[in-house]
Length: 281
Length: 320
Image (tube, rainbow over all chains, first blue to last red; front, side, top):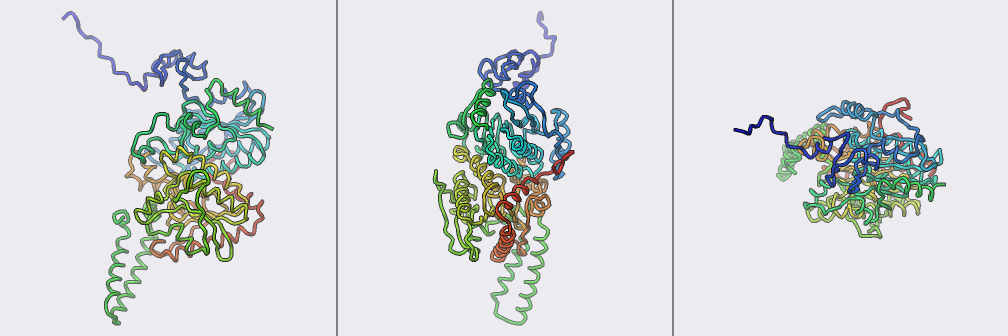
């Protein structure tokens, strides 16, 4: 035979991993499937230059995006998770935390910093979805509470950026109570007449949505972010029908009156700065 | 229900035998036998109910004969006037709210309400409130503040309703606003977990100066079934999830989340609802008396510190 197969056939590409195959030089957009220059995506604040899809931002990138260059001073990094329930599912909670800390380089799912936004001093706290789905346990609750208290003592506005699956099951009822704890601290911030701006990013659900994510004086959202109380799968099981297109997305919340504006990432910092100037003391 | 509460079967069998026996003509022998069986029933109830597992407590907390909010209202309050509606969209029967007299004292009451028969269960949406329920609750909280009445809340819900309409009308915003407003409401609040304390739907009326919990009720961040479905991809492992999450009244007390565990009658609140309601009434009265001693600013400061202290973490500044 003049033709002989001398190479083993190539494995079929998994669409999930293929986006990262060219990691480094190229990237594939999760929405329009276009192949993009990674550098160009990065320059464009992790937004697809072709279709405007917003890739998820790491907490550190978010801090760099919002705070003025070199103004960030990190806060409360010494607050570390415990294991109050000695929780174990397929893995021990302690081991899981250690793994995430190794990957993320931080002890839990939140970053807090003090800095300036267009010269205005603010306290900023950002949830890190890459760390256990940005879930809120005792550490996230404590750091957000301290951030609000810090804003009160510094008489500065507070900005929180959410990205979270909700309360962290592995800390049980203590996670639920963080909703009340953070809310109480935000109520004090409100009584001090200091603005609290909340920025909702993909995804924001569960106990985070049902507490501080919905308590902002002004609430901004990134385009097409999933924002809801129950997850879409739970709702589909409840009502036994598939959900309409765009349900629980930022634009849906805007239409129903639960966010003030949907702001594309390239305009986010400027919009935030304007809002703060309009409200801050 | 029979399959769900198998651990109760020995008690049920004994009760049935007792009832049969009581139907016989009176004789000294019968009286001796009845007395013997009654003692045995008491022993057995105490033994079984003294050793319930977290999952068994979950089933007891969901028992359809367990007292619901309106049962407490009927027995503890006089001249109760129920208030309806959130003044924005509709009335939610899954939360009841109103004012009544506790002894000589006018109080506000807010509680989840489940139904006993099928029709009522559906009308009450199995105790799962929509946003309107939380907004009605907020309206009554504000009225209580305005007129200086203490607030009693009764918590018994599987969770806020996870439906399309509920999301559309902002159930998260409704709960979030209640957490915010309850944290600074200038009147005493006493919350009692009477059955299922299901997640954010429970906490939405649960921020209080004193949080009480019936002995066999449960309070958790997610239902054992939900936790099992997520962590083990298997709802059937709810029993393990119930153990792992530490959802019992004793656990919540140990974790510093609640203040008082109210003991239930032998055999659970559903075996003797009147005694259970009475015990809850006494515990609420005692809590109110403690809170009455505080001026309102001190009350609010203490409420802040109470929730401020919740959570367990490590680090140089642990415990602040």
